[in-house]
Image 1 (cartoon, rainbow, N blue to C red):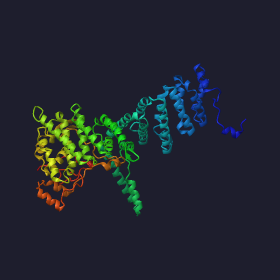
Image 2: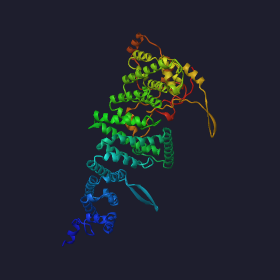
Image 3: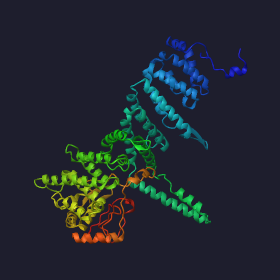
Image 4: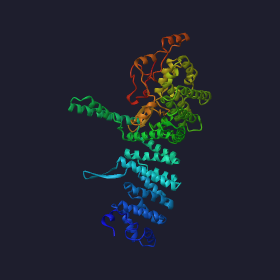
Length: 616
């Protein structure tokens, strides 16, 4: 007979409380005797069940796992709902052993086990009572969450070890369990983070998991247009200013410098005012971190890892990003990985170039590829000028061949439907020139001018297809100003003729008829326009070329036509130290020399999209 203390400290016997073994209970149930079986279910469902009892039952089930056929699906379901993650480490270890035994002996329960694990990839829901109202919220204890997630991944690895076909059964469950985009930021963050962790030990799922994540990010991205995000930020900023002014009026006290600095730090919050933008910002930050961690080992770039991930990301890009119009931020995962090594940036440009020139691709894909080339060349500050020139040569040569083939005959007229890829390529070239012209001319002005003259922009601009009529007016104006200054081509006569030929379009709506002018017949956009999500922006900023406004002196300088110089003049300049320097890629709005010097606030960091006719 055990004493009191010995009884309490000793483990329970390994037989069920009501007598008999678990195997006996299961066999009786198959014969129609359900009393012991119901008692067993009742004990497992008891919320007060102790850790020692759970361990006891799990050991019994591991020994009898061969009997847990499809007939006992209800019992297995109860076992899979046990709150094992919140129990002691002994319970966790025993449960992991049970899962391994179960799926190896009864693969019929594989899906159920995978669903159970996937359900724990988000914070558990808890019910909080506030003012007699019950509110469901996430249990966000960081320490316990991290431990729970680690355990779930151990469980998944255990199952995958016993059942090699686990990945093909897991993927549909991960898709099914992905939280809706209106769920909390923390819920989405945890789920996406856990999906990316799976790719480390189940690499065969990486491509599918990346597709799933990017697809959901795109849904958020297109649901939060740039203008809506900027409006929300402006409203929040004005609200903060108003609140701060009110507080200063009420409490007009002297503050020491440290207090002021603390206030300034607090006001510069990284939280996005737009709720969907806030979710997207957090998730993009996770994706950027994942890409960096996979591609770097011990702080150094692992080229082989990067190549493998690059291939997967390009596949995702082709399938999801290219066909999606006007996404603002998600496509930057390609921008990020291409910044690690020039070879990846060149491979991406080559990939886009093949999409653009291939006549078997849909027209919309070819046009979008052109937009990506132009935007990438303009905005990626890690692309050297030699690569820019190589791409410009490819694009311009293709334009000249296209003109050779189309500039005579029945289709030699301006039509965006017939010649969409041509116009998209023209716009890509114009856009890249606007951002890169100073670098192209830097160092040796004479060689730079000779290079630009050899591109023969005049033939492109003067051809029957009339690209200046189709490209965005803001881009056309900037291109015209730069080419005029360096006497490459004079565009304004064509621009004015096109303006006279512009026919207004009458659109009917419930509010009555309205007259509109189509200024974007290509329906084009610049995929690498400024990145405005606050947290993840910190990853992009160091590798991004912003749009810099010119000073008044620079504006006046650009108004002056460029004077061709002799070799002697250039030698004099050299002696005087006046060789042009490239202090940054800058541009101006050629239609606003005397007013509106700065771009509209909504397009800070990007060429202005307004268009005002300029007469010379």
